[in-house]
Structures are given as C-alpha cells and as structure tokens.
Length: 292
Image 1 (cartoon, helix red, strand yellow):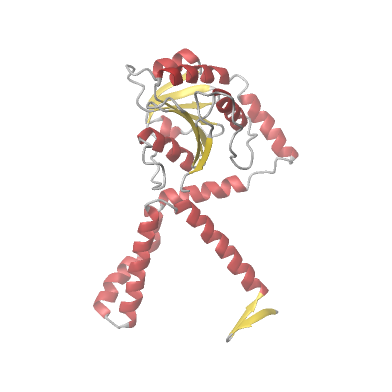
Image 2 (cartoon, rainbow, N blue to C red; image 1 turned 90 degrees about the vertical axis):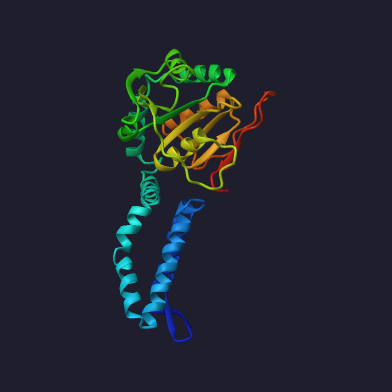
C-alpha cells in the first residue's frame, strides 16, 4: 500500500485517510442525532465507567476489575437498550438517504403511484378545520403518514378509519370531546385513529414554553417519517414538525403547501423559511431546527 505521509513512526496511507474521513462523518451524524438529548449524558457516563475500568485493570486491582468487567461484557446489549431511540433515528436517516433519486424513472413511477393513493384526500378539509381551530384557539395535533401505517401508534388510540373531513376533525378536537386529548393519525386519506399517544422529544434545546403537545409533535417527527401539524391552544398558531425540525407562525396557505409537498413526495431537500405573506395579525414563519 502506498503511503500518503508519515507521522512519527506511523505510516498513513490513502486508505487510512478514507477510513478516518468515514469515521468522522459517522461520528458527526451520531452527534447530530444525540445532540441535546439525555443520550449524551448516558454516553458520557458509560465512557467514564470504561475509562475507570481501564485504569483499574492497568493497576491490577483484580476484584474491582472483575466487577467492572462484567458491566463491560454486556455493554453492547446495554447500549442497544439505552440508545434504542437514537439507533432507530440513525437507521431511519440511512433509509431516507438511500432512496431513489428524484430523476430516476422508477422513482418517478413510484412517486406518481403514491400520489394517486392520495387523490381522494381533500387537503382543503384539513385547512378549513385548521382555520376554525386557529380562530377559536382550540388545541389540535394531527399526524400525516405518507407510506407507513404507524400501527404501533394507532393502537394506542381509538380506531376510527373514517374519511377526512372538517366536521369530524372539529368534533374530535372539541374541548368537550373525549377524543380531543391526543393525536389524530391520517394515512391514505383516512383518519385511522384519534386520541393517540405520541413519543415525547427529549431535546433540551426546545423553547421552554413548548408544552407536551409541542414536544409530542417534534418527538413523533424525530422517530417516524411523518409530517405533524399542531394548533397551539395558547396562541392559536400553526406549527409543522418534520424530521425533528419545526416551522411556526405559519399561514393557512403555507400549511397547505407543505402538506401537499409531503403527500406527493415533492419536498425540498431542506426546510427553508417560507416567504412572508402580508397578514398583520401574524408573524413571519421561522424555521427552527430542534437543537439549535
């Protein structure tokens, strides 16, 4: 193997440089996934324990080294259990990054087929419901799934399997309704379930005024390939969550635009700040990556 350069007594080759680069990219992606979560503190605790184990072993403290060695022996299994949400997000990230290119004919065919699945989904029914919910400051949480049925989360709520319409959404989120406390899950143009329980984001960098409904919306977008729509009960503001990021202060037209892009798989590569509309009663939308 040809050597690129030499550091002291170490010969560094081109393969070594590629190896180091790939490891750096991997570590950076892992850091982005766990940044701001409790997983960082857990990882530091495990790392500290491992360093103590190395010191104890080097000092030939046999009894303590044996005890700590038992912990290290099950370390891989323990990390899988402790970091299950982060591993899930990492695998989901890999799955998204290996999708077909948008210029691929097969991808376009699949995209058109998936778009036809949503032809019967009247997005305007959702927008009209949001208009009413926003005006009355009625809290609401809606999860839109393009490809997956989300059976695990559907089973936590009340099964409906009903067509999406304004009246039904308003009835569900009415403050006197037994179904208003939780999320509605929409898949293939139907409300699969209501009063569903969603995972809560553990991101420490979210605004302090974000309540359980906000954290549930962001948590769901972190762990699944969904678009989550939130109507704030305190302010009536419309918020969208996707891939752990959120847009707030949205207009109804902007919500409709983002929802159409998601359902027809025409989303931009990155969420950019949407153009401001002339509407003095609302502020311009802000793109806020959770963790920044």
